[in-house]
Image (cartoon, rainbow, N blue to C red; front, top):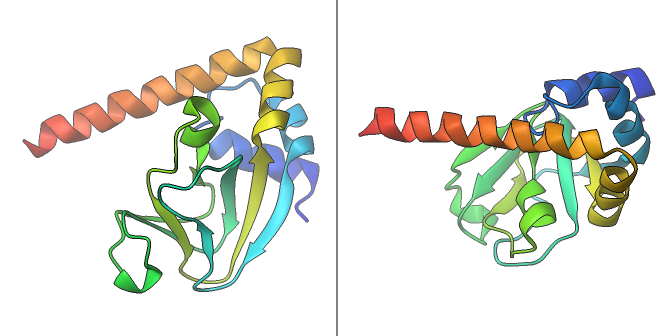
Length: 148
């Protein structure tokens, strides 16, 4: 298990929590659960509902629009510090992709009700998350514009 300081550093580097105040990240870090996935394991599948978001501590996760991990068609390959699965916690929609462990991976997970509880107790946390999400959307728009 990562110690508290390592978890806070990992959160600060992650795209969804990068704009959250460090003192609020301590509370988030305490709510994270350790999970281990082995190469080929599905973390979650497209169109399923989920109650967890994940931060990759080490290993590699492939993100695909296919439900079959053998398709080997990945939109993205995630590495340490990347987070995924957060959209479902915020919009209550089915998963938009499948996440598969491309190698043995250690993840930290955050359950939806725990995130909601944190936001109730630390309202500034939601502002930091919204700012991070907004910056990610702006960056995605810039990348899409550059691709045209």
